[in-house]
Image (cartoon, rainbow, N blue to C red; front, side):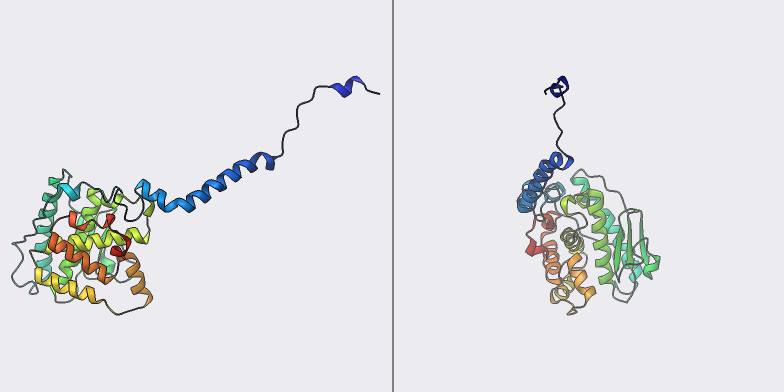
Length: 270
C-alpha cells in the first residue's frame, strides 16, 4: 500500500567524491599533456626558451644603447709579470672606469663591487669555499669579485678578473636577473658564462691583445681532459671552442652587443 511517506520530497543524491573530482583531474591531465607536447613552442612564443631572440635577456637595452667599450688602460705597468698584484690592481681601476661609462650611456646606474678580493687560497674568498677548483668567482649576494692569485704570469689572472667583473656587470645591469624558465639551468649558466668570456675580451682587447689571442687559441684547443670535473665544467661554462668563439667576437666587436649570447642558437653556446 502506498502511504504518504513514499511521496516525501527528497534531495537528489549527490555524486561521490571521485565522480565530482574526476572531470577536473582529466581536464588538468589534458592541459599538462598539451603543455608538455607544445612546451617548446610556448616557451618560444613567450620569449623564455633558450636562445629566444625575444627574451628579456636577449633584448636588453645595454646591447643597443651602450656603444663601443673604451678598453684602454694606460695605468697598466709595462712589465705585467713583474708584480702581478700591481697589474691586477691597475686593471681593476680601468674596469671600474670603462664599465661605469658604458652603463651610463645606456642610462643604467653602475655600482662598484662591494669588494675585490685578490686571494691566495679559496678559503679567503667571500663564497665558493667548498666549490671545485676555480681561478675566480663572483658572489652575487654581497657582490664580491674574487680572484685567486697564483703563478707568475699576470694575463691569465687579468682575464679572470675581467671575467668576474663581467659577471658584476650582468648583475648590476639586470641581465643576470632575466632567468625566465631557465633558472639554475645549465643552458642558462652556459649563456651567462660565455657572455662573461666575451665581455672580458671586450674589456681587454686594447690593454692586452696578444695575451687575449694566446688565451683564445689555448681555449680553442681544449684541455684534452675527459673526467667528470671537466665534463661538468663544460656543461655549466661551455666548451673551449665556444669560449674561444665568443672571445673572438668580443675582441673584434668591442661592444656589449657583440656578446649577446642570450639570443644565440644552442649550438653556439654548447
